[in-house]
Amino acid sequence: MALEFHITHPFKLKKPVLIEGFPGIGLVGTISASYLIEKLKMDLAGYITSDNFPPIAAVHGYAPLYPARIYVSKKHNLIVLISEFIVPLGAIYELAAKIHEFAKEAGARQIISLGAIPLRADGEDMVFAIASNAKLLAELERHHQVKLIKEGATTGVTGLLLAQGAIEGYPVISFLSQAHEQTMDPQAASVVLGVLKSYLSLDFDTSSLLAEAQEMEVKMKDILSKSKAAHAQYKKTAEAGGTDLGAMYG
Image (cartoon, rainbow, N blue to C red; front, side, top):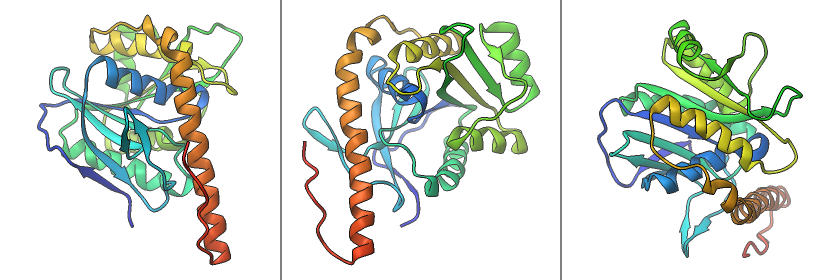
């Protein structure tokens, strides 16, 4: 099965912004996307599947859901893509290409990726930015409290989105806060959301994020651990030619 975007609730937005929040350092991307979806009361529009994704369903409010999902907000003219598992290496290239394709089909005026870099000595509240073209760089430098990255590298889906955006002249921005590498970092998510809020002139409160962090951490750790276990179990079973898939209930 190829990687596919499934739209269960068709929508039409006028030049929306597409926001991508996938797991990475400090789980900042996923935390930020999850918080946006909740606080802006976004609607579930669909989900993403691939035979490279771990075979797991996330359960929220008693409802089983695909762990890679698509949300929309007509009020705020936004599309948010969220993943509750770490995207396997074998799916990264195809996923990045599909996101670009989906963004264009939806008429998105730009893609914004939310994430983090390892914590540095120059302050936790600094947010770094990378942009796919000179116009965006000038805009970020002129209007927003971010530090532009001149030299370095960014990896995964975000890196490919930026590189493809640069080649095609398509607007892509990455906002990267500084986060602890080994633990979930809601403070870093709060910082990057503050920049996003200012950049898009959104109206939502980030103060409750830290208060909700403990409950969120338990949920996300559970989903991530189960997705890793499911992926490993299916790989082991396939290699052995067996059918014992193990217990995945929590």
